[in-house]
Figure 1 (tube, chains in turn yellow, red):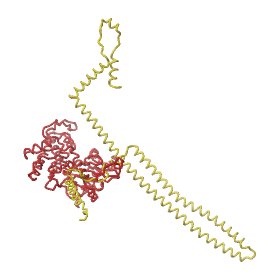
Figure 2 (figure 1 turned 30 degrees about the vertical axis):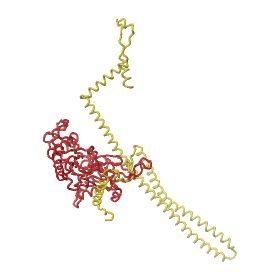
Figure 3 (figure 1 turned 90 degrees about the vertical axis):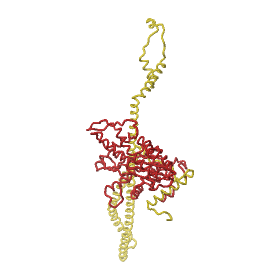
Figure 4 (figure 1 turned 60 degrees about the vertical axis):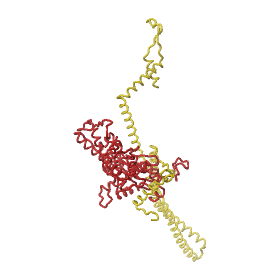
Length: 264
Length: 357
């Protein structure tokens, strides 16, 4: 509710109603009428005049002090915000570093796992080739001896022996494979668990980073109004003098920074 | 070369060059940057005293007002003294000197950070340093800054004030800092040793004088030098008092009101005599044809120039001793040096910056 409306309500509440008859009974023949808007205007004018006159005196200092106090409070609040922002920026930088480290670790672990898998596949293939050759040689020797045995068909004997041997070998292989796989799976499993853990950690860190970013608007800096190095403008009234002065400052700094001047 | 901000219509957000002008002062360090940022920080650096305070403060290093407020938990360094680094650069440097050098490096880093550079921008910085800083000291400032910027140059502090205002000829700059007051006459070329006068009667000397006078005249009053500095910055004046300097100081734990009007005036007045002597020396050794012009173009800059009535008091003293003169207080005493250094950074040709990378 506005100031004027509040005043109107107050005036209405403080006034009382009466009839013309009751006024006549009291001997009142004429009344002067003052509209509510006029009353409000008078009150406003009186308040403004009073405030104006008081502001010249002691209360102006009080108001000035209050304003200063409020200004200082806002200033402090601004400083607090700046401090919070700085802390958030530090948190963000730490989180970014952590993410970088985690990403590097994941890459290293993945590389190690891949290498391990490739090495294993190669060694298994080589081993199988050797074993097969040895078995085939033994079978050939058996067949050869069977061939020297009267009444036996060569092909039937070879087939039977081969089936027998391969059956045995296959059984052995299955057992060995199971054992090897169990060993291999443990290593792979460990590596995969470590990678999963790193991934989880990465997700958590990224979530934290998002939370930090959501908490406050993190300032990425303010752009310079210049996109290139400027130099003294040719329109400058003292352009030559300034160029000389710039050269003087540069030479002094060059000497100080112990850098060799081109062509010197 | 005057390619400006929004060539590609991206609102100037592309990669660019951020110029920074820095006034590395004993009391305050101010920066003005080409992105519109202007900041000032007390030249004070604090490191947590132990693991407990580090955990409590959640920071490895604090600066400026924050360091001042938390000083009881910190090992506090003010790395500059009398306008130069507390660093000799010789082999016999002790642990304290090394710590001050580290604090200076961190302070410069903080000042650069306050300028809010974008990560993808080149940062070129000009630092205003006292004219009489030693070569080792200047090298130390350069090294401290190198960690934070792409290219850096030093220049004389009073020169940068004059350059910032485009007053390059026949002007005498008085830069009143905390540690030193530097006077420098400009005559269109780089100022030489003979063009400069430096003395250590400056803001800190006023604080010491005021502290002495309070001790003498206010029995039992308890105060620190920081409280004295605050009183000076609030009420400092010379000449006629515009207001009474009523200050509450604790006496035996109870705040007690003291009228320090006269003490403040007397303490601030110690600046006038050496300044006028310095002006006298620089005017008297200047080309006689231009001495009057020089006397009428005296610029008052630096935090110390904010003492009320100082310009009028120096003018009055010049009239008595030099037959007249005109003293002008610059509009922004705190940022005068930084603004000038920024202008130098901006006017420096690109190949000069490149060579100092």
